[in-house]
Image 1 (cartoon, rainbow, N blue to C red):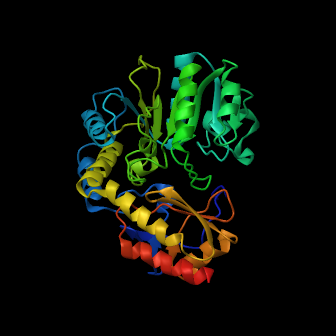
Image 2: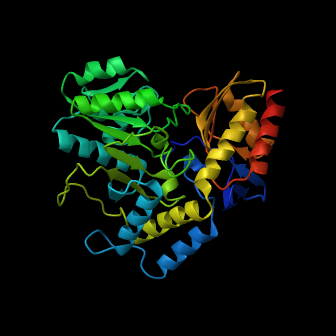
Image 3: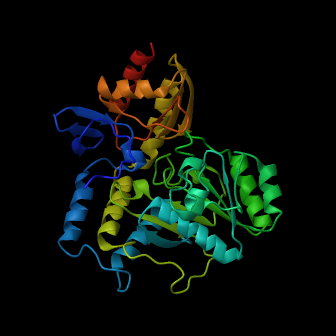
Amino acid sequence: MKLFDVYPLMPVTIVKAAGAKLWDDQGQEYLDLYGGHAVISIGHTHPHFVKRIKDQLDQIAFYSNSVQIPIQKEYASKLAELSCLHEYQLFLCNSGAEANENALKMASFATNKSGFISYSGAFHGRTSAAVALTDNPKIIAPCNSREDFHILPWGDLEATEAVLKSDTIAGIIIEGIQGVGGIQVPSAEFLKGIAALAKKYNAKLILDEVQSGFGRTGRFFAHQWVDGLMPDLISMAKGMGNGYPIGGILISPDFKSSYGMLGTTFGGNHLACAASLAVLEVLESEKLIPQAGLLGTRLMNELKNIPGITDVRGIGLMIGIDLDRDAGPVRTELVQKYHIFTGSAAGKQTIRLLPPLNIDWNQLNSFIVAIKEILS
């Protein structure tokens, strides 16, 4: 049987990983500045992460949400402690797309409306409603298209209010920082503006923190850089599990639950909770969240002074670099000559950096040296 060929793959076979380092089947070492799409938060095969999973496997790996699963409550308690969102409610699922689907569904339930707003450059997932709000027509099938879903110009509050006046909009969804869109950081004014408009027109504000959450920006969630911003719903995944599939939504206390409203077979299983609990414990014990902020600021300041780099955007260790040339050949040379993994973006001249949060400065500096040599 052949694999369905949908991924453009690098000619590299990774067989081992530790921290921010990778090794291929030829024994070649690489530096991982991409983390498999911002998934690796506390570093590959972190000892505490591995131990948590092994210990849980010795007890029970899975049972469905038809019995008591105490580790879910343990996880929710620790998540509230680190995120400072004690009043929110937690629903656990398996991925970022699934988290966004459930967030959209909750907004529609609460408002009894069906329309949604997202923004240019958005990526919210590849499933039914999430993909219809993703700004990439190539991945939207006819069955996904929705006339009451609106992808509006980035930062445009006037266009947002004009659509909200139709009284058909259940919610507005926006990434804490756009990832695939090239690390676009929404201004505080824009986020506060859409929050006020959502409230005015009885719509729900959904913060998609799938890529920008779990400490990557130097705050637990990227939107927490905006004082007083309290979304109705927050979606999360990727760095949440450090490679183990898990997702979730945080639901404001205004929403009331009922049996059967949401559901999932695998979401919140014992093993997934153990993996994600390990992430929270390492983020806290190793102080990785403030470290991400400090390292990211230092790295961006260095990158801004390199000829050939036209723009540097981001917060913490979520960084977008615009070049004066196509980024594809540069990224290829980074892999082949310097053995450094980086990420692409929708813009052809953009490189994304999304390294593990426990990376050290010497490792980041090796990228600075490499990119200087390539661009010169």
